[in-house]
Length: 261
Image 1 (tube, rainbow, N blue to C red):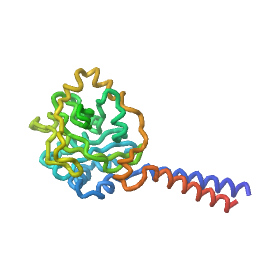
Image 2: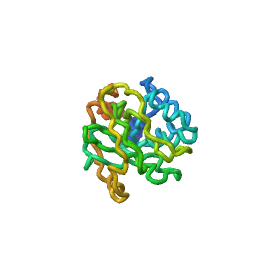
Image 3: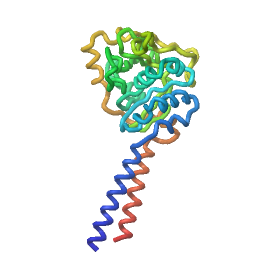
């Protein structure tokens, strides 16, 4: 009997760990497949093999652009496309509520591009600023880069592992392309945004006056934030659903063990 109980306990632990691990995994390709407006961006992630790198991460935020805005990326050389896409991959979990709680209303967000040797002069950072007209805007942290990519909506989120948010324009560091003419292109009104909404154009120098201040800004971001209701609606389910599934799995496993003993 003791041997049976030990075996059942080991089975419970193994299956519970497996269920929990499964819930933390995601596939960015499948997430974006739910929305045809991100078809081009999704295709670029797969073509450059960045989708595979993203899926290996446990905590990440992707700033996506719709098919129209993605033309600012597809017009670039293939090797530059991957660099620009990596700028849109933030190495932490961010949702509107967490951004709202950032001290001073501005911060440097570390991107996947920063982990490469090609990132220089703050090109690997994304500058987030809550503008005076109550808009959340993003741009390259490279000096002189505009902050003109506005938050449009939450596409999907799984606190605190995955956040996918749509922005109005591609974030392209000025010096990242061979011509050195990269920028945040300003396409037509994005889906879900007002055509009358003004997108502020602010330069990185206006919000980050010194490199010392810029280095400190990333520390102002809250370590975590509670689930966002708008994200829940965008994902089509309550963000606590994942935890509920894990709990139900554990209850079922406990019942199995009781039957075995």
